[in-house]
Image (cartoon, rainbow, N blue to C red; front, side, top):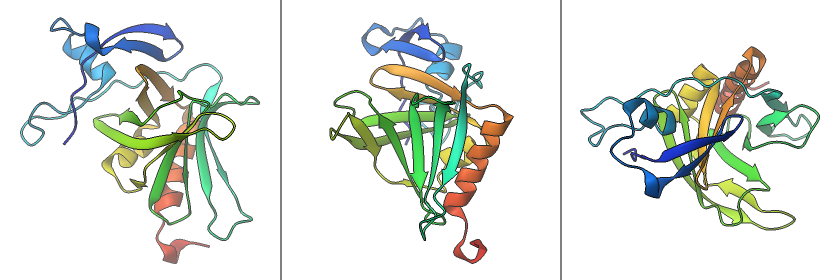
Length: 195
């Protein structure tokens, strides 16, 4: 069952929104709700989910995929990043054909324990934990590679993340959207198709 989130938000910077759940009220429009979290209505079995509008790519950012060819399991990382910098608000990792994906946020909030991801009409709430080796690093619990969210993400090439009261849009160029599709395929590829 998907959770309905209704909050009042203000745009802070490129693709980022600061939200205050306490200030949300009945004046929030349907369009606002779809932009914040396109979760299903109170009864997801009878009410259709709202589809979030696709955001535009943030200047300089794109999705990029890297595969470690040295490892037998060919682990891959898909990161939303600014080229030639360490700026990376979110990344995913998996092993080839493992059908398990993990989300990660480096240098994020100290006590982050969950994030919400939306792409199109699919919303995924993921728990996890934050470690503090060199910097706060959030690692999600295991996510099924075949989840409806990842199918939508592969088809759309963008997502909207809500973490620690902030919403961040992460849309790719056509090159980035292709990297998203390749990553999801890599994570879910049946063993017989592996090289």
